[in-house]
Length: 517
Image 1: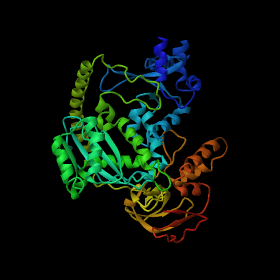
Image 2 (image 1 turned 45 degrees about the vertical axis):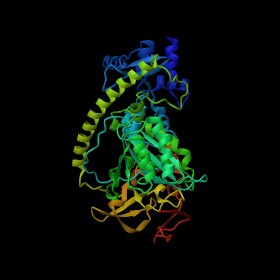
Image 3 (image 1 turned 135 degrees about the vertical axis):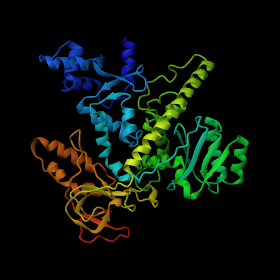
Image 4 (image 1 turned 180 degrees about the vertical axis):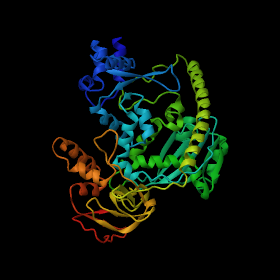
């Protein structure tokens, strides 16, 4: 029993001390009655409260003086996971570990939620994670505003790594000469393979495909790409014929239908949040970005991760290396192959059902959202779309931060046009269309709502006494985003100078410190 308990604790990589976690669990107002009941058989004197504690305690257990929650999976009631209970004072540390770290790469709400819940239990988990990510300044600067949605019909392949999408992204030139990123995506598992390239000639592409794709996963039956000159040449054609690969090309007008395009956008966001200065160190972050994408659970994949669908097992946690990678494997190659075949057959059936269900649900959701524009109110905090703004001084706009702020809606001219002002009240001398705006969220101390209005922000910043720590904490949150200097300057009551893309100062706004809008 002790060996099992020791292994259970080691499976959790904690950003805080275990003894401190035990103390916080025993003193947390919500978990203390449950902990006392399980550890010491102590129940509240109030009959109704005692009945509630007994009922809640059925979902918890104690192991090594730590409180765990028993989680039954929705798709399989027989499958059980023990979630380590996280007290209120430690919630943000856990969310930060799975959102802000290098191997997390600022992923979205659903992927972060599905991954965290495999190991930890937080009260109001989805809402807490959603509020945290919604108010993440790095995410607000680099993530694009959602385009108008339209109905689509998904291609559903049959076998993993049988149908691949391929595309390239031009990147800033590194000191070692790398200029391009090749991304290959499996259309059924969404597993991506990223390769840094110095040139896009046919010989380099063929070598990358052989070394990183064909020799690892076997030759696919089909590769879909655009009609780039390096992919339509004789060398790629000969290699495809030799390996039995069918080449399919997407026209320029239909380039957005490539499934790999969506993954390149996500990987670009992962890379951008880690880059500094000229952005020429992007090669260092390609492996960790690809690993983060492949190992996080996805709602489109039925709460599975691409890694799990590709290899039939859960991805290892690289922040906790005390695991046995051979645990649970069959004794012989034949048994292991039979086990993999059984798993892949099951995953194929599940994927077909999930794809159809996801497509139907998305079509219903899209139909409800068509032709609905954003509505902003006076005093609301917003970000302004300005592609020339960035903390990165690279020549390429592809890795620039495209959103600047926070700014304030000063006046609503009509449903689609607005006047903006800085947080100090200085009005920008231009009229802005709602398509260039998106809501801004500032993380608050409350677990339910983020700050979205300038009046509420001023009230919090003027709070005295017991709330001083919360105010200081909010100042640190805004000032921690070193890539967007105006956030720090505004919160420190410094003057700001706004420039257009040609370097001209916008009228009516002066400053001691300058920042590009």
